[in-house]
Image (tube, rainbow, N blue to C red):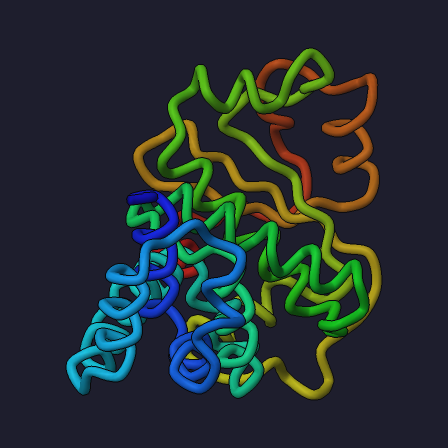
Length: 242
């Protein structure tokens, strides 16, 4: 018995109704790449056709969607009807679930980034919001040491501080999304920099002017906060995922 192959097929049947349908229609095509006994093949084929598998799939999807809804809510909202097909592809390529919020957030964010790089997902606002929510999740869950290691030797900012670049007004954009409203049609475009300071109990958000952003990101960056730069800091305004 090849337990790993058996478990892999069983997990894929739960994760993907399409995979299960292919197995029912043509089991030989699915099984030919695995070293399975005749008994194992019969068991898997019978389980694939069992009505209870649909319930398993529904529960599995709910469990897998929960970490994404908690860490990337704005991204999921922006994707709208595109989310379903994207999740199908993501879950097909990643059949095993990871209920650790930051780990699943990073894995799905990497998947979406690859989709955008390949030209299968064309939406610059989604890319900006995805980077924002990923940063918020990392700042919330990672320790200072983990953040420091992630930044590496090139990190000029304190590990709990991030400066994100937007091509659309982040204040109006994030305010709209926090109210579950689509981005305003007249959303200003340009070069914007949003700083997130998570060194205190509540994150502080600050829009930076170009000079302040250059100072923080360039050689003039200091170990502390660039006092007085940009717009006044705003404590947690409902932007960060909880």
